[in-house]
Length: 329
Image 1 (cartoon, rainbow, N blue to C red):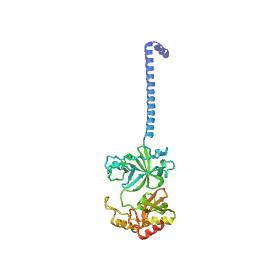
Image 2: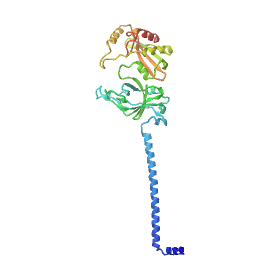
Image 3: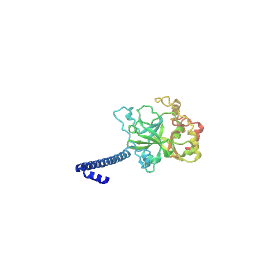
Image 4: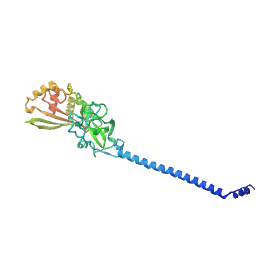
């Protein structure tokens, strides 16, 4: 009874209302499809843009220690900024050495390609080569005093990142990278006087005689207005290496009163006496300590100047001078 009545009512509905309802339903369905299609298109666009951005970041940013884990970084030395001939000699533009100063007084000089080859088999760096990050290089003026921040007088180094070179297991080598270049820098010396050979050895990782691989030397004497090599040699005996280390690590450096003052009187007087010696006695011995980590430390030794003199230090005792003279003979 009820179903027949309901059917009768449905049959009595005007056709225009049925068509109108059908149109509304189709419009809602179309709108829903369009909405989800638009959302899918937006998600796709975001994915594409994100991928492009990641690609740009990975290819355009300066290489870092984390990047080196997936791809080796080729060493490429920094070019020095050419001096400006119109500037005064003391101007910053004239100081174009490719060097970095660390901890306020340690000078690191860029190694040549041949020197870098001694530490890298294929001329590249990877993540295992990166030690502690030391900071970002800032540019300093010609006579500004450096601080603990990595500094340089070379404009091309400003903004570069600095790391210790891990394989040498010391503070003697650093990695400097950025601005389109990457190279190894070696500890050269201290910016100020008053640091001993022992200080230099410590930075380069030589704390005792066991850290020395060998010692080479070259004896030179005057020959008229020239200098000639009289003898060359290499010391490998452990007891002799130990003797050399004992002597040089207890040396006391001398310090000038100011940057403008000359050598102390005692050294000037000794040099005047040295000039009176026979040419064969005016011996200069260039000594180079080869460390087991691949680094080296060298110094200039004059056995007949005063009681024996190693450049930058006070005179040797007569006993220490005799011991070194016997080894480098």
